[in-house]
Length: 371
Image (cartoon, rainbow, N blue to C red):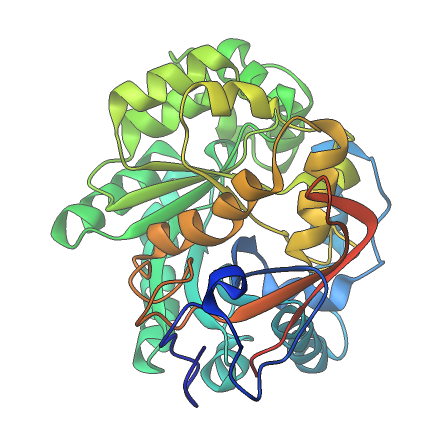
């Protein structure tokens, strides 16, 4: 039972409660707390259906480079925010490179933490890029929106820019995130200064050749250069190996790992090896990524893809990833993520499920029912 503000005041077990109070609404399906979408790019919502699929990461980046701006940006952002709300998403870790999403976020019922993203591969521009990022961060914070500065990806952030970010975290620990090992070529670049990503970046700026990389992986590069963060969310992890996970956990206990399976299939046509993350007790979260690389902004659709490829994983375990773990990363676990008295997590109904096996079906959908 919830009060008029959506705060849980009592949890009823109908098998032991006896006669249920009047006004109880019955549904068929599974009830769960509101979802936490830990990786999205809301400002890219106008790119829905615009990009070719399965081009690999370099092909995707090239399409992004050529198609960054579009018409009806504000309307597309509003529609995406509304879709996530209706699908039961109550909190989002959202990547921003612009201020396009500020007004929508201020009015939304969704709790947003905005990751103001920085990238530049030329060391000489690090100071300017960092100051521009601080200026954008100030716009979000002055609008009353939770936000922090973050790097884009290992291959797009120079050591100089990572150093500036790390120093800023030392002064005030912040939530951080980074795209991690989304393609196999990412590690190739750091191991041997070769591969498609390396060649692509050198074509954009020959200064990339001046970077010295003596690391075993792109993840090690990040962990060697980025320090003092409050928590770090590693996103995608499509080609992360078990030895990388073990090394990362030796570095910090404050690591979270985000899977965006439908975006992985859209771009690389490959999923992370989820089992190695489970085996190493990783704190797993779920994201949708953006409409540039997805057909829906639905956490249930992400869980269906995981379930299709890893049927041994229970829905209960995946819902912990999609609800409580994300809330914990954002520091909102006292309000969101689980059904407990005093919390206001939102109530989501997952319909069209196999009630006997507790499994999602292709037809499974979700909707917020406490608004």
